[in-house]
Amino acid sequence: MLRTAHAASLMTLTLFLSGCDSQKRSSTGVRTGEFREVADFTFTNQEDRDFSRDELKGKVWVANFVFTTCAAECLVLSARLATLQRQFEGNEEVAFVSFSVDPQTDTPERLAQYAERWHAKPDTWRFLTGDPDKIDHLVKNTFLLPVSRDPIEMGKIISAKLIHSNKFAIVDRKGVVRAYVDGLPEDSTQTVSRIIVQLLQEPSPTHELSSSTTQSIQP
Image (cartoon, rainbow, N blue to C red):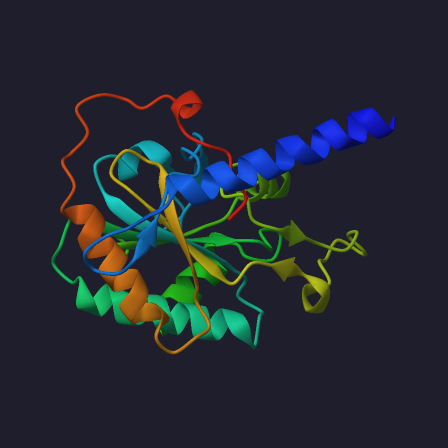
């Protein structure tokens, strides 16, 4: 048992070090890496229409995780994305996606109201809801971020005890997560903006990237 535990520890250390080695600092001073390709998904947007990962092909996009009844961090994160949307207004190669981590409460109608609050343009900034298990699986296994909810009581989620990440995940044109940025600090919009510009300068992909070519490193 001790030998097995020691081997597991060495493997974890190796993965951590390889993740550090895979990151690089560009001329803009922003550190990026290659974490994991975003898995296929199809959810429902604020216009009550299906929206899939394929619609983001060739774009640089920012993902975050919110819920409409949140009265604290989610408001800050949404305000940050609203600022970024204004900064990249008119650039069709940039998109923003907010996944609801309380999909049973966040119907398309609620998301539409929330999106209107932040002046979100539906062709640029999508708010997505769908099957809770599928959303949780995407957050945990593709974005490698935490999400947790209390058991459902009386058909409602106890939103006050809903746990999710405050990080923005920035995805390149190939659909690979390249960087994570804590969205709460005031300078986070500048950091995300620099990463977006950096990724826009990279060549457009000429072929599909297999998820087996990217590393599964915890951000």
